[in-house]
Amino acid sequence: MRHKLLRLILLFVVSFILITCSLNPPKNSLEKPESEKILTIWWNRGYYPEQEEALEKIVTKWQEKTNHKVKLLFLSEDDTLQAAIDALAANKPPDILFSERAEFTLIPQWAREGKLLDVSDVIKPIKNLYNNTALKSAYLHNNNGSQSYYAVPIMQQSIHIHYWHNLLIEAGLDGEIPKQWDEFWKFWQKAQDILRQQGKDNIYALGLPMSIYASDTYMIFTQILEANNFQILDEQGKLQVDKPAVRQKIIEILDWYTNLYKNGYVPPNAVNWINSDNNTNFLNHNTLMTINPSMSIPSSQQEDEEIYLNQMRTIEFPLNPDGTDPRYLVSVKEPVIFTSSPHPKLAKEFLSYLVQPENLGAYIKGAKGRYFPIMSQLWKDPFWSNKKDPQISVASQQFTEYKTRLLSNLSNPIYAKIDSENIWGKAMQKVLIEGLSPTEATDFAINRIKDIFAINN
Image 1: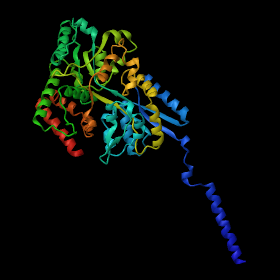
Image 2: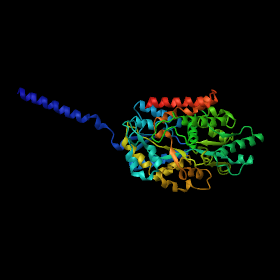
Image 3: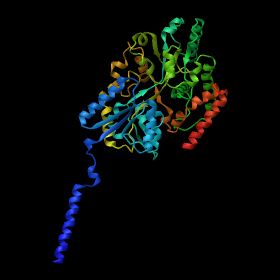
Image 4: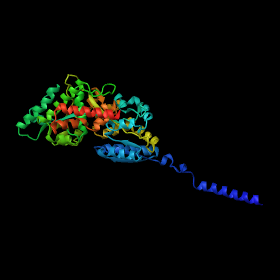
């Protein structure tokens, strides 16, 4: 009887446990099914509503096709990277991040630190559609020293020259602009001198940023270095600033560039410009010519046909000082997935959908010519070659008819720190504000560059 009672009690306890387990399943079984997961995307806000609208349409189509939900958050260009840095520190990153500054600042570093997910399975199915520059931009070193694809290229930008054709007419210089390097720069200075004689004292020849506050400063100066066949890194990505010839070339180029300011051909406040200021000064007709690391200036004027079609012009760079054709620096824009992203599989699926040519082409065109394709078949769209468009058709030639190369930070991720510290802007400040010689400013820049490489190697 006693044993029978014990058996009954044991059966009751086991039954209670089974019932409790069925009512309170293990935590893993409570996880949302794949169809209920929400994909979180943080995306750099576009300069134009059409760019954001194009992405929203792609997101909507993907949701309808897959039954997945997406939370799309647009952030300002200034806020996107900091938000990502904070989210990584808190281990709460989005599934997908796109910043228009990340590829030349943090993406190489994140890859090297093992923070980015390998996205080879996104790229390889369409690898033959990409140009070599785009593929190279995403093929990065990881924390094990090997390389793979850690970003998904979507579009590219380069550095462009814009000028006011109507002001040249007023100066009586509406003929052909010189192609030779020295003559090209003297041409704009001559135009300013003539306009000043006409009483237009508020117009400066050259809208060249020379501040520590603008990424445009180091990007434009790096293009000037490129024109002078100068590179801080050799083909293996090794630093070569210790070479006397390299140091001397930096001194000469820095002296030439800062003298444009000293001689009064650059607005005095260019030493304090932020990225938008060269745009603003040009659009206000305070500068006759300006250089900009995207096509944002003419794109902003597309609604005003008189300005866009008749008054403003986009031109190619002059020949290099040695007489050779220019080679343009390009920056490839690319979203990433973090290794700690909550839904990496869904993130890859969405990016695979985004980079299909019909989707990607619509998104790039939404930027109104500010950025350009990286897939050969997208260049077939007349949007890029329409000769009636005096801005986009000229800029397109830089990508399709000339050699290009990536910014140096992609051959050595440490170089991204040189850019983020704006070393060239600081060297200009040493000359223009602190009164140091170009030689002293160059030595400052070289020593800081060497310190950055020593600390991070």
